[in-house]
Amino acid sequence: MEKSGRLIVLAVFIILLACKKSGEKRDTQSAKVEAQSIDSIKTKEVRFESEGVSLAGTIYEPQNSYAALVIVHGSDQVPRMTEFAQLLAKNGITVLTYDKRGVGESEGVYAGPEVGTNNISPENLNLLAKDASEAVNTLQKQIKNIPIGLIGFSQAGWIIPIAANQNPSIEYMVIFSGPTITTKEQLRFQFYTDGNTDFWENHTEAEAREHIKNDPDRYEFTDTDPKVFLDKLSIPGLWIFGEKDIQVPVKMAVKHLNALKAAGKPFDYYLFPTLGHNTAFSESNEPVDMAIQWVKREANPQNE
Image (cartoon, rainbow, N blue to C red):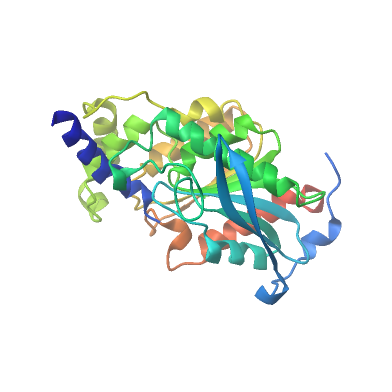
């Protein structure tokens, strides 16, 4: 019963993580890409193999594409993200979005809070990173002479750096509200905030850091530190945060990114003071628009 109780507690807190500026010549016309109609975007259903299972997805390809992205999920049971993929495609980005392992038309077993399993174990994070890497390989077969990267949300802050270390074809990464602290530190923070949307009205940054550092872990598993993987990367990266986030300790993340930037990493971040965790799906279009412009700049460095 003790083990079961811990799994239930883990499920309650991990599910919170699921809520939704700093080669080869590219096509120079891409810098002039204008918004494209949905009717002009080609779609292709694909399946690809990853670690013994078949995953299903859709490729969205605009007529004039200057970059490509694979969408990496957050922690819940996420099928392919059609609307977000279409938005990117209408802005000249070729996109592959796929049903998460064990969800929708994808085979395999889903690990996560809804089924009482630990979806932030190193085994599961590495498995999801391999899925993202194979998705990149699949998309790469469909495109020519345009760079490919990863874009993701929340839990993807752990997954994307792992995948980028595995696959040299990944040229850049965009992460919305992704942690730069360890998985255990993340959960200590979430236990402390307890889903309270007014948390930052009544608590200080110093108090939050004290709890993240010293609170006892409520269960045991091997920790994952994304900074280990980020330290090995030399590709550009963009993080977008909302300062009111109660799932990711944003100021700690910014501190970590500043340290990596000072060490020469080509990492950028933007902080939106009034937004929370769901930066990509808030009422403001600015976070996603900013990400699109950043991708355009990174995909076409000769046009800066």
